[in-house]
Length: 204
Image 1 (cartoon, helix red, strand yellow):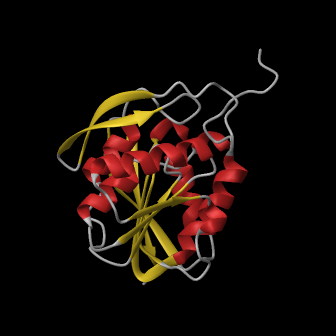
Image 2 (cartoon, helix red, strand yellow):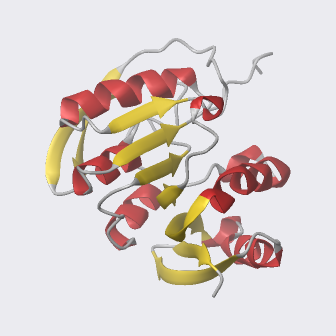
């Protein structure tokens, strides 16, 4: 076993990059995008991401939109294509993923998206839409800290949509979100293909 296990949530993956091109369909467009080893789901559009992109309501047409854990960019690019008047932020700790995401956004003609590490997002920014296929495998404590960092930054009318696999704890995550004192409420929007889309918005 490797002394330095390589995870998609590593800041600097140790594995050789070995870029490859894959064909994906985003926002009704057939695109050829670039992925690599050491990032999340390099061989295809992840099924959970596909469920989110097909099932989430349209994002805000303007304002700031956020993709938590952007990987090589499919969610951020879709947000940017659907809301060309908005500013999209794709955040990830994996620097290789950020480089690929920027390359892919350029290939898709999505010029209204910024990819960066979490600390590079201005602290005063608030988000009208947050979409995420959150990194469940980082562990519960790290996942909770990640969501605590971003979800309270929704605007008063902002909405977040998270896709989580049923057997990886979507119901317990929903319960945990509703137990937090953030002024937010979480409901289940839909279920498809063993995934659930959770909707988070300001409590009435």
